Image (cartoon, rainbow, N blue to C red; front, side, top):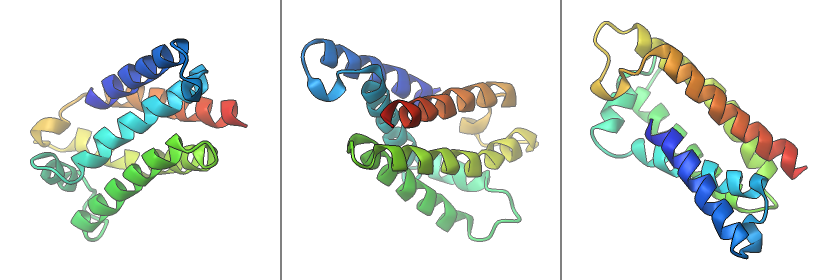
Length: 148
Protein backbone atom coordinates (compact mmCIF):
# COMPACT_ATOMS: atom_id res chain seq x y z
CA UNK A 1 0.00 0.00 0.00
CA UNK A 2 2.93 2.38 0.68
CA UNK A 3 3.91 2.52 -3.02
CA UNK A 4 0.34 3.40 -4.00
CA UNK A 5 0.24 6.15 -1.37
CA UNK A 6 3.63 7.43 -2.57
CA UNK A 7 2.34 7.58 -6.15
CA UNK A 8 -0.80 9.51 -5.22
CA UNK A 9 0.75 11.87 -2.68
CA UNK A 10 3.77 12.55 -4.88
CA UNK A 11 1.61 13.24 -7.93
CA UNK A 12 -0.84 15.48 -6.09
CA UNK A 13 1.92 17.42 -4.30
CA UNK A 14 3.72 17.92 -7.61
CA UNK A 15 0.54 19.10 -9.33
CA UNK A 16 -0.18 21.54 -6.52
CA UNK A 17 3.34 22.90 -6.98
CA UNK A 18 2.50 23.29 -10.68
CA UNK A 19 -0.64 25.24 -9.86
CA UNK A 20 1.50 27.47 -7.64
CA UNK A 21 3.71 28.33 -10.59
CA UNK A 22 6.41 25.63 -10.77
CA UNK A 23 6.61 25.12 -14.54
CA UNK A 24 8.43 21.77 -14.22
CA UNK A 25 5.20 20.20 -12.94
CA UNK A 26 2.84 22.35 -14.97
CA UNK A 27 0.83 19.40 -16.27
CA UNK A 28 -0.70 16.24 -14.87
CA UNK A 29 1.71 14.16 -16.97
CA UNK A 30 4.79 15.76 -15.46
CA UNK A 31 3.25 15.60 -11.97
CA UNK A 32 2.49 11.92 -12.50
CA UNK A 33 6.11 11.36 -13.56
CA UNK A 34 7.19 12.89 -10.24
CA UNK A 35 4.69 10.72 -8.37
CA UNK A 36 6.03 7.61 -10.10
CA UNK A 37 9.57 8.68 -9.26
CA UNK A 38 8.60 9.01 -5.58
CA UNK A 39 6.98 5.58 -5.73
CA UNK A 40 10.07 3.98 -7.29
CA UNK A 41 12.33 5.59 -4.70
CA UNK A 42 10.14 4.04 -1.99
CA UNK A 43 10.15 0.62 -3.63
CA UNK A 44 13.80 0.84 -4.66
CA UNK A 45 14.97 1.67 -1.14
CA UNK A 46 12.94 -1.29 0.16
CA UNK A 47 15.32 -3.57 -1.75
CA UNK A 48 18.14 -2.53 0.58
CA UNK A 49 16.62 -2.16 4.08
CA UNK A 50 15.67 -4.84 6.59
CA UNK A 51 13.28 -6.54 6.98
CA UNK A 52 11.89 -5.70 3.54
CA UNK A 53 15.01 -6.89 1.71
CA UNK A 54 14.74 -10.29 3.40
CA UNK A 55 11.04 -10.45 2.48
CA UNK A 56 11.75 -9.55 -1.15
CA UNK A 57 14.45 -12.21 -1.38
CA UNK A 58 12.00 -14.74 0.05
CA UNK A 59 9.44 -14.15 -2.70
CA UNK A 60 11.84 -14.60 -5.61
CA UNK A 61 10.66 -17.81 -7.28
CA UNK A 62 13.11 -20.63 -6.43
CA UNK A 63 13.83 -21.45 -10.07
CA UNK A 64 15.59 -18.09 -10.42
CA UNK A 65 19.24 -18.08 -9.33
CA UNK A 66 20.85 -15.75 -6.80
CA UNK A 67 17.75 -14.18 -5.32
CA UNK A 68 19.74 -11.65 -3.30
CA UNK A 69 21.55 -10.41 -6.39
CA UNK A 70 18.28 -10.16 -8.32
CA UNK A 71 16.74 -8.09 -5.53
CA UNK A 72 19.79 -5.81 -5.54
CA UNK A 73 19.70 -5.40 -9.32
CA UNK A 74 15.98 -4.65 -9.42
CA UNK A 75 16.37 -2.15 -6.58
CA UNK A 76 19.12 -0.33 -8.45
CA UNK A 77 17.03 -0.35 -11.64
CA UNK A 78 14.06 1.11 -9.77
CA UNK A 79 16.21 3.91 -8.33
CA UNK A 80 17.78 4.65 -11.73
CA UNK A 81 14.33 4.63 -13.30
CA UNK A 82 13.12 7.13 -10.70
CA UNK A 83 15.94 9.48 -11.67
CA UNK A 84 15.18 8.96 -15.36
CA UNK A 85 11.54 9.92 -14.81
CA UNK A 86 12.63 13.27 -13.38
CA UNK A 87 14.72 14.22 -16.43
CA UNK A 88 12.42 15.32 -19.27
CA UNK A 89 14.83 14.02 -21.94
CA UNK A 90 14.88 10.51 -20.47
CA UNK A 91 11.34 10.39 -19.10
CA UNK A 92 9.80 8.30 -21.87
CA UNK A 93 12.67 5.79 -21.98
CA UNK A 94 12.61 5.48 -18.19
CA UNK A 95 8.85 4.95 -18.10
CA UNK A 96 9.04 2.29 -20.83
CA UNK A 97 11.88 0.50 -19.04
CA UNK A 98 10.02 0.65 -15.73
CA UNK A 99 6.92 -0.77 -17.41
CA UNK A 100 9.00 -3.74 -18.51
CA UNK A 101 10.58 -4.07 -15.09
CA UNK A 102 7.19 -4.06 -13.35
CA UNK A 103 5.92 -6.77 -15.68
CA UNK A 104 9.09 -8.83 -15.20
CA UNK A 105 8.88 -8.62 -11.40
CA UNK A 106 5.16 -9.33 -11.07
CA UNK A 107 5.56 -13.13 -11.06
CA UNK A 108 7.22 -12.76 -7.65
CA UNK A 109 3.91 -11.34 -6.38
CA UNK A 110 2.07 -14.35 -7.76
CA UNK A 111 4.61 -16.66 -6.15
CA UNK A 112 4.22 -14.82 -2.81
CA UNK A 113 0.43 -15.15 -2.98
CA UNK A 114 0.81 -18.93 -3.33
CA UNK A 115 3.31 -19.37 -0.50
CA UNK A 116 1.85 -21.24 2.48
CA UNK A 117 3.44 -18.73 4.88
CA UNK A 118 4.50 -15.61 2.98
CA UNK A 119 6.66 -12.98 4.67
CA UNK A 120 4.65 -10.59 6.86
CA UNK A 121 5.05 -7.66 4.48
CA UNK A 122 3.88 -9.75 1.54
CA UNK A 123 0.48 -10.90 2.78
CA UNK A 124 -1.64 -8.63 0.57
CA UNK A 125 -4.22 -10.56 -1.43
CA UNK A 126 -3.27 -11.21 -5.04
CA UNK A 127 -6.37 -9.37 -6.29
CA UNK A 128 -5.23 -6.23 -4.43
CA UNK A 129 -1.69 -6.62 -5.79
CA UNK A 130 -3.07 -6.96 -9.32
CA UNK A 131 -5.23 -3.84 -8.89
CA UNK A 132 -2.24 -1.87 -7.61
CA UNK A 133 -0.09 -3.14 -10.48
CA UNK A 134 -2.72 -2.00 -12.99
CA UNK A 135 -2.61 1.50 -11.44
CA UNK A 136 1.21 1.58 -11.61
CA UNK A 137 1.28 0.33 -15.22
CA UNK A 138 -1.44 2.81 -16.22
CA UNK A 139 0.46 5.68 -14.61
CA UNK A 140 3.61 4.74 -16.52
CA UNK A 141 1.63 4.47 -19.77
CA UNK A 142 0.12 7.92 -19.20
CA UNK A 143 3.63 9.31 -18.72
CA UNK A 144 4.86 7.62 -21.91
CA UNK A 145 1.91 8.65 -24.08
CA UNK A 146 1.58 12.12 -22.56
CA UNK A 147 5.29 12.85 -22.96
CA UNK A 148 5.49 11.99 -26.66
